[in-house]
Image (cartoon, rainbow, N blue to C red):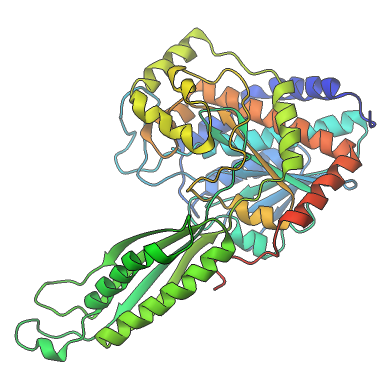
Length: 463
């Protein structure tokens, strides 16, 4: 066994540290849940993490690439083991902690993706690993990356600026309804607005002098419909007409189509995007209009590092799961009842989790689902996984069948059971980091795997 003690000893030390700080972690998560801030506006959320980390002896570095982004580091020698925390809320998802749809403030944001939990769990992991390393005499440079705006642009500016280039292993987690290593991949994506420009005229008196930007949008969107049959398997195109003109009696001089491209990987995104740009040019030729594009955001596919995922799976089995109180169980059962039994399967099937779980209230064990599967959604963790060995896990903060971006997930994310799940996730990640750092051969295996499986990094936004 490498230096630093046994896995059981490290697990006990980490679990004890997190338990002794549980009240602090829960208060942070509760505060962020009660004060939801949308992407690029996370002033309070970022500040509370920076202060806590600084008070715990972490050196804070502010990043200029994104508002409210930062890195905290503790330790000066050894491998760099990093954890990523998010803290942005979703617009319009305000919700009280209850079992019926009831916004705190109609139209206000809410933590329906559980980022109030995500940031806290990663904080617990960073602090617990730093403590365990110090107690065991193992040199580690522990990092916490404060990552704002996940629901929008995400970590891409930090990745492009090289902020993760010297990391030996990086981990994160996400609230979910099951406990499992995140072995499945995600979709790469690219979000663009196509702005078409024509010439206005009176639609009845002089239509022949006008050139309709809306006609260009409609022809462009129609081309996407025909293109669907002739793109690679797994490619998805979603669009809306975000501007279609002002009045029917004015030939629109301006119109726009807001498009999402999703694909199995970043290379396919770029291939499909080239064809879509040709379609936009074709629509302009037919309507004698012009166009420009605005790239909103884009994410690479997530490349799970099997070496790290195996370590995380082992850690998840080593750290005992929390048990819900009777009140917590009753709350989860009542909240789950607001989701139909048929709809509960929607959270399980994409990652090949047993559908029989839909009959249970909460996931009371550790599964290992999703190997070889790809979900339609996208994560900015994907870009990080292109430049550093990356692992991720899910922890059951929500009742089985409750999915992200719903009022139910927002409600559950403010409940005491979710805080327990976040702390458990933190302990699992801290133990994983400890195991990697104390075993250089294992860490080198993860790095070799990354060199073998990750293509050279290029953002999907760099067309």
